[in-house]
Structure formats: C-alpha cells, structure tokens
Image 1: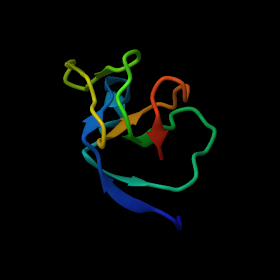
Image 2: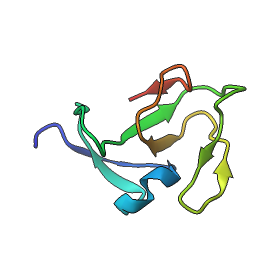
Image 3: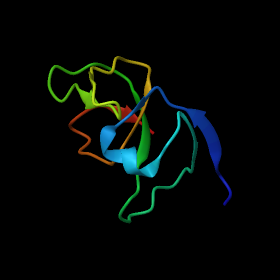
Length: 83
C-alpha cells in the first residue's frame, strides 16, 4: 500500500491491547471507515477534561503535549489531535 510510513508512538490505549501493537507502527495517510481501525494522533495541547488515557499496562496516564498516542477514533472535542 502506498503512503505507508513508520512512526514511534509514546502511548498505546488499553482498548487496543488485543491487537498486539508495539511502539513502532506503520501508518497510512487515509483512515478507512471500518471496525477495528485505530488512529495515531499527536497531542497538541492539554485539556482539563478528557485528559487521561488507560495504557495497556492498566495504568492511567495524563498525556502531555507533543506525544503520539494510539487509540480508536474519538470525538474531536475530546482532545485536539493532529493526524
């Protein structure tokens, strides 16, 4: 598939645990609308609400600016993401 590239992510959401993802993942520019799709996002700023992410270890993290996280798609109102 063209347009694929490899990125290293800082955080991986627990909901993706069954996928067996590592911190180095291959991503595509387009996001297909289908079950099982996850997104990689870069957090640009901190929010006072919706500011936590449960990691695959079960730990609750408060992601800070300038990190990349993997999670299923969520409302754009939850966090400001740049894909």
